[in-house]
Image (cartoon, rainbow, N blue to C red; front, side, top):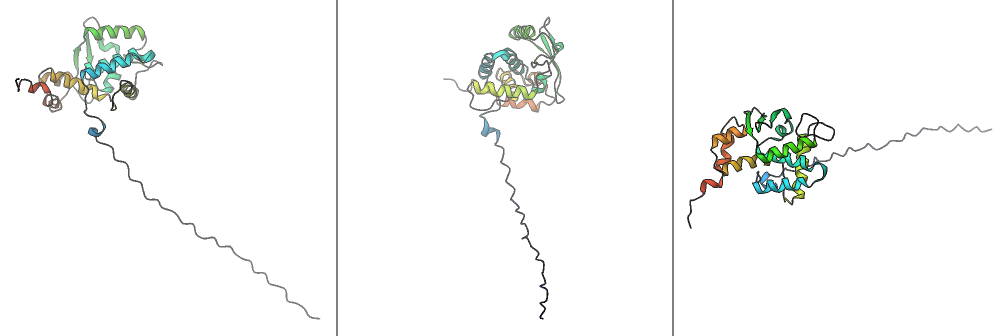
Length: 217
């Protein structure tokens, strides 16, 4: 009788191909456009500011608040943080002035309030009787710099501006308005709270009023 040797079963081992890690090239960060590519200039004209104020007034339930915020920011050359930090205890209706507290180490000052500003501020207080901040949100907190910037940008779009309007353009608008009114550099420096007069010179250097009368027709 012939016996058959048992069949030897050799286990098979499956080998998987090594996974290749695909390394993608880092995408270049898009370059930020220069300011002169985004807008024609860094300031607004008085007429453009008036257009923004008029447009803001028509924008629903917060229109009057937003219009006054634009007016005060422009008239007093405020940075957006200074504007949003304004409190009612900085306003003196009886003496018609406002106590300006500057950011970035700027010099504080007391500015007079015009008749238009006084009327608008009285109305603002009637509409927002509670709270210590001039410009408040519906929840009673202070308007934030980001909130004001977004509001101003939307107003600019609705007003038909072809470039994005930002809050600092209102501060520059104030400086150029004073320079074009032939105000002396030292007065503009004190009004805007500049520690260094070099920060103020740019307004007088670009003021067109310096060249009035050079040509006579």
